[in-house]
Length: 269
Image 1 (cartoon, rainbow, N blue to C red):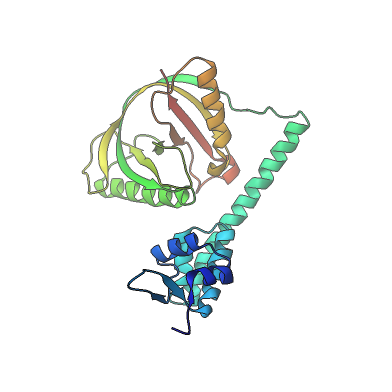
Image 2: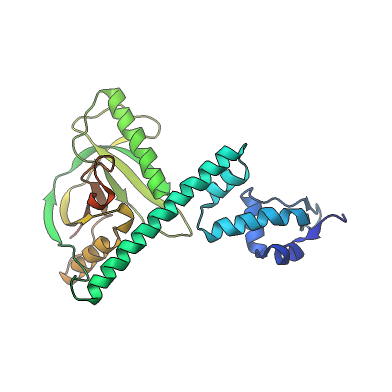
């Protein structure tokens, strides 16, 4: 086929590795123009280099692959622009967060702030009935996953005529890893059982001794609170006895991002 080039040559043209091209093919982002039925070898048209370059640039901007697919496969310009604008806002939030961290670093250098400003305490927590949505998410998509899950949980409670019995919380069963999805449970505490659906289950969250601290500020900047908790648990001779929980003490729709309060509870033994 004279109008195509082999994958190795195309890789050089678009500055994407052969491994990346195969991965993007598997995801439906950039399919080869022709695949040899005997060898499985992939061939591309030179004109596809423009699409490959768009993918490379968007990945350089840390856009998730599923959102890149939305941009590339958008039915019209408005849909593509909306996806790009969502990511622009995400990058803007990251920039603001980085500036806050730089300001904090300046205080550390000047000796005006402690390296671990979170106060850690211990409390006993009773078991709690909750409406639970088990799901998985990635580091880049966690905010959207939680937002959609909360809407589903509280929509079901409203339909059921039930009232929440406490602030919403997330149980994190795994640490975040860029290479795989993380299992979480999105939970709405309830006083009495409600009807279950295919995705939503009623379960009892176990109680017990919890080391806890409160983070003030954007959710994405909660990392130092976890570091303070884990360090305190180790230094005081405790073992981690279960997955940590994030409890959202106020509503992001009603307070500024800098005033958000997130309590992190970690079961200990």
